[in-house]
Amino acid sequence: MNLHYLESADDPLVADYTQLTDTALRRRREPAEGMYIAESSKVLRRAIAAGHRPRSFFLAEKWLEDLRDVIGLFPEVPVFVGTPDVLEAITGFHLHRGAMAAMHRPAPRDPAAVVAGARRVAVLEDIVDHTNVGAIFRSAAAMGMDAVLISPRCADPLYRRSIRVSMGTVFQVPWARLPEWPAGLRVLKEQGFTTAALELTEDAITLDELESRTFDRLALILGTEGAGMLPETLEQADLKVMIPMRAGVDSLNVAAASAVAFWACRPEVSGIGG
Image (tube, rainbow, N blue to C red):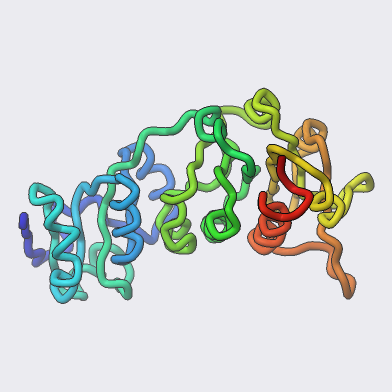
């Protein structure tokens, strides 16, 4: 085990873990440096099970035994251990989950390859809240979505909060970032997908109506909250879909709406599928 005991927050060896609470900084820095942070032993294990490789481990000494089997897979990778106070001084917060790792970021995937064998795809337009992105991925995994595509301005699924909220399912569901938007939707058109935008418009059909129709390949587009979906995106979508509401409520949080829509459109539902 390549063990290093930390005695100071100024140790240059742990630069990957500094200023983790500065969201704007980390959003720029992590992709540029080809890394991301996996927080908690459960998330860390899921990342490694998905084939991702650690740059280093970072944990309180009491967690060493719990992670010995994982750490043992990478004898050359440094393991940084410190007291809770030292670790907090480095990261900017208390490590409630005990352990984290700096991981090598996998190479970007080709959107066409990601959806090649898919029947159900989620498409995220400019959803900038990392919590919502993580929650959508968790719903996508739970409800059997085959892949996720994200727009160029969408939040990073491999940001620490996204990963944590997703419970590591961002490693489970294949995903890719589209290079342009909304022109990137053509990758779905070329592969025979029907695209359905979840947006309350005058010509929107209900989710019940969508569920009653037969689609071999279906892509559900979810837009950012507040401003709603871009007019250009709605023009390209084959269908607009609304979730009927009661008691004067006109919308759900986008993560909640995604769970409802994914459940309704899962392939095994009668009427949905080829």
